[in-house]
Length: 307
Image (tube, rainbow, N blue to C red):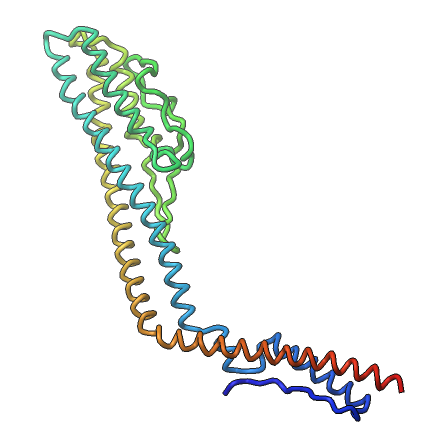
């Protein structure tokens, strides 16, 4: 049933007390309009319950999918950088034993090889993803490493340290979805990169001409240890990626189900909107009539008061 408001018509013979009573009724009607209390059905249509809830859930899932997509793309970029770093290490692990052979290598060739791979590793450690750096931890806006191509060499026996590092060891938080927070703790401050950079700097401290140089031995050992640690870091990143992919699939499945439910309810939603619009129009009309009558009542009250 379409809700209606009383239409106040005033006979000229109305007494002042009657005007006051109608004024109170008008105020009560106005309050009912403001509170949506005139029609129980109308108040329900103002908040179509499950339909709106499903639409909100769908929007929330879209946000979760976007967050999860960002995190997943970031992990993919990191996997690519780690693969490139491992390739450089493998090349050096193949090259150094040749240098340690009896003939030795000329300084220019050795230095060139170390410099090429140091620059390549530096590029990957300072790789950017959108607005931040992949390996900077929570300092995502700061390049994590100094230029490894020009960084100073270290003497044999030096232990790994963070003097090259501008990042930190606090993991980058991945907001996979609502309530599902993951942490990517593979940063430039991780032990694998400390060993890698220290090994490169020690190798940089020799010219490669002496196959018995202890720098070649320690550098090789540090790169070997770094390679193993990077394999473990890569496994961590792969596990995070798998978790994100699983979450993404679950989110997409949930969204498909919600969309299916919304589609099934669409006729009811459209009908509710049409009915709601009709009730809105009727309430607006009724309020307009009340306002006009109120003006008339006040005018009548003034006329009566003049007698």
